[in-house]
Length: 215
Image (cartoon, rainbow, N blue to C red):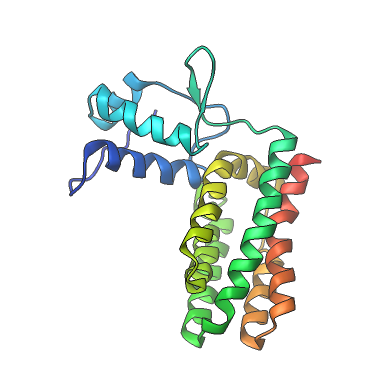
């Protein structure tokens, strides 16, 4: 059960629901293959069927949810081929975003990324899968926003969204006990202005773990 009532604020009910569910899926709060119903979401969020239907329609269109021939809506359980495809997209998009951000990676930005790394380590110590995914994506987004390439970043976020439940499953398999080494390499490359090193570290960071799932 979601049990996540929406906060008051501007915007249509379906848009607020869409953003809430989108964040939960992207951050791995829902495992792969979890079924969602209009009635259940409407009850948990205190909404009628119309905004729930519209929010789910948008999420299905983005690939965040899967719609079966029978009308069942669920978080996607990705095949190995699909995981490899999305990993390939990450390996293309994210190193390019990082390199475009490099000329604007000022010391305050790098310090912010170091602070996020500390937060990631705290989530690892708590064995909080969703917290780890959320802060890990924050680490990447913080850098990529400096690329000033909104269309490319939007594409990367769509990939993150489609992979959220799968990343939850990956976290359990990795059994992390310390910060990913590639995060340290990314920060070091930023400080040194090392474009080839940055490209290599980002590509390794976004693809290494996914190979375990597709292997």
